Length: 92
Image 1 (tube, rainbow, N blue to C red):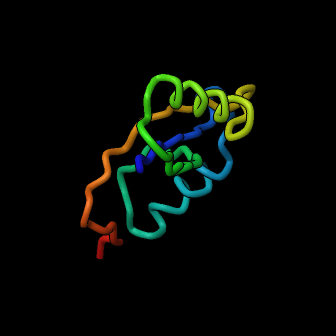
Image 2: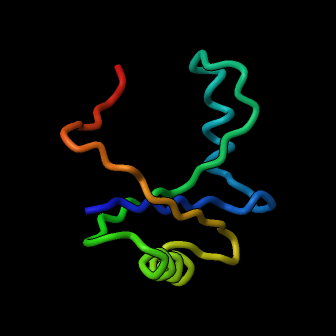
Image 3: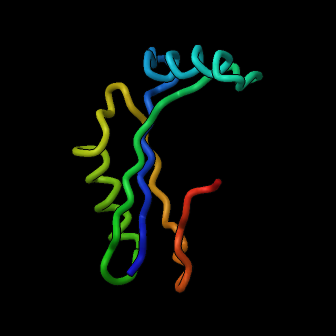
């Protein structure tokens, strides 16, 4: 089983109030030196079988018509390599 990741971000010319709120809060929390923050969405899709050109085309179609509002958002699609036997955890 393969994992395909679709990242959706507001287009650069679109105002991002959520990102701005985070950017303004960072210095108050002791995180200096961050000049801009943009907020987005990440979709992880588990795909049965091989992820060939046809599967990626269908996923791009899905992203364009359902996962992203292409009037105000851009998206990228990529295949994420799976590491069998490992688990992802939060950094401490």
